[in-house]
Length: 101
Image (tube, rainbow, N blue to C red; front, side):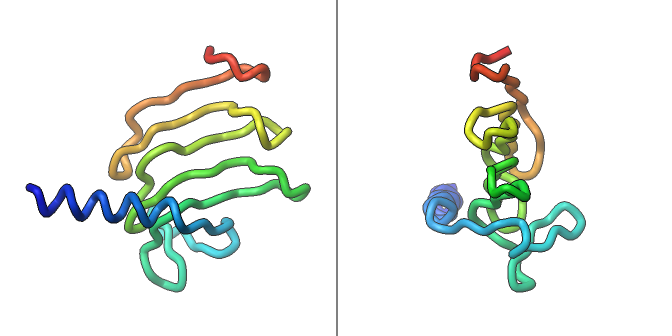
């Protein structure tokens, strides 16, 4: 059990250091890959104007943590979906002023 916690902790640390944009990764069967290997880190999806549309965390190719959708300004959160080992566990929605609905 302790070894599992240490392993998860080390994966979490690496997530904070890496970031790729959607064009640098592939999604196959719900798994995120970079250079044909399961990816760990942040994935950022931008609009044609360069504004952030979505940003989410993956560990070993699986969504884990916050999946954040933004309004067209690229700053204000529209929703936050919480994932745990690839399973959706909670969704929070926000209005354009950033207030939770």
